Image 1 (cartoon, helix red, strand yellow):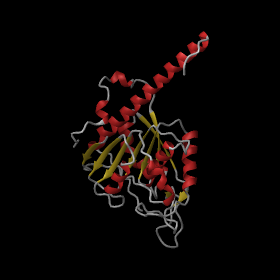
Image 2: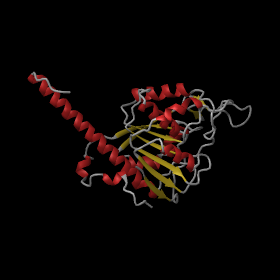
Image 3: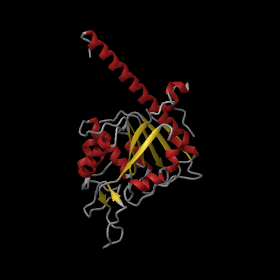
Image 4: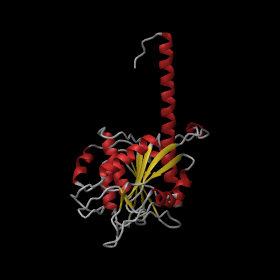
Length: 283
């Protein structure tokens, strides 16, 4: 059920030719999994979502560099349960923990920066839970020019503000790139209030609420919102590419001729009925 506020997606041009969808171009998105997940499991869980928007976007999944602390005391860490950083003194992570450390965060930031450079080009970031928290931090660092990653848009599912002390200053400036925030009204791991708090750090916000818990939803109720968001991002990407080509052509002509050329949010509520893309994790 859509609110009466105008969606950013509703501003899309109606003529499909405007989108130039015949082109092979897609926006490319770097995806960051949640705590105790890995790139492969996250990719599998987003199968339905990727089918919804595969016409407009390509997704690349990477692994966090750290093994999560074993659930059982004295157990061995599992190679397929990973973490981007740890915010508790015992070397574990919990999204609700406040004023803790950020062990391993810089290592993870370097991993994402390397992927952005070596596996790119990318236009956007997507993250779930701890991965969404990391996406928010990267957007803040990019705003302050403290990372080589320069996202043009982001999708944050079950996101939240990091409680690590060293991250507090990253949230001081508002972020203006388009973002889609997805969260469950009955999420018992990352509450809807935590995800709503994160949206306050962004200016160009679209919100998709679902009636479920801690997972990335991908049902018929969410499909059109995802399609609309990625159609808009693809349109912007193609328009920017055209502007770049025009600018380069004008510059080239000037050089050849010897001239001295000058150089608000929409909230959508959907049910979680039917099949869903589960992204549950333990924190």
